[in-house]
Image (cartoon, rainbow, N blue to C red; front, side, top):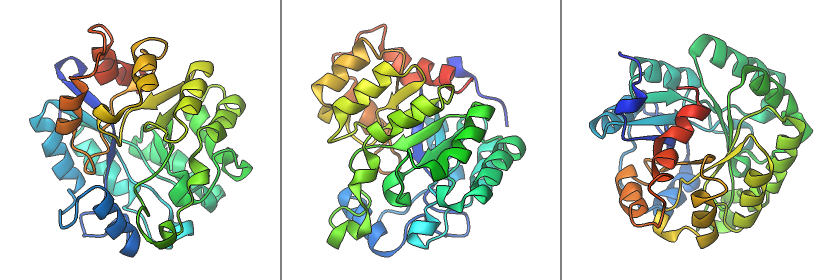
Length: 290
């Protein structure tokens, strides 16, 4: 498959999920999956495999970062294999960029896995979901992992703010929101100053905290996934247009939110003409070294 041609792309979506493996295994099980389906109004819809994600984005002349979340320690449910995702991305390198999910609770095994995924499988970054993985990002048990990511210069993408996973399920399905306050990631940005970091989503109810961290820490970025742009808080739009115009990234949360809907709603935001292409493509291309 041909290499990625950034100039020919309409946009780079930095936040999409591989939720089902080729053998049919799913990233969520039971009540958590049904709760997410209800929250995102996806009940009964089949999730795409990674090759299907590639075809979807190729039709739209877009590229996409693809990842799963490994929360096996907290949930007991195995993830979609990172190696499978990376191989599918390699087979579709014109449109897909592989990230990986590793479980920080797996300690030295996670550190070895992260290094191997970058060096042997070409993984370009890592997704953490503190709510689902049940850890504070500034927990020292994860620091060995961050050391490797900083050394290899691959971004760490952290879910921040509320999550649709567990929403509406009794007790939130055991998912605790406290883990996803972006101020916990501020400690990571201090302790690993050369680690590229992405704060995922408008970080409700901590939007101002996320803007503060991204404004204060040079290597911290924000992706705009998980919400339709018509619901963005006004201060997020203001900062994306000004102080953070080089650090804000287009992300959809596909297949939970389609890039078609996201881009249509983004068109209606009062974003400056010179800033729009930075958010949609060029900030991500620079961050990911494309």
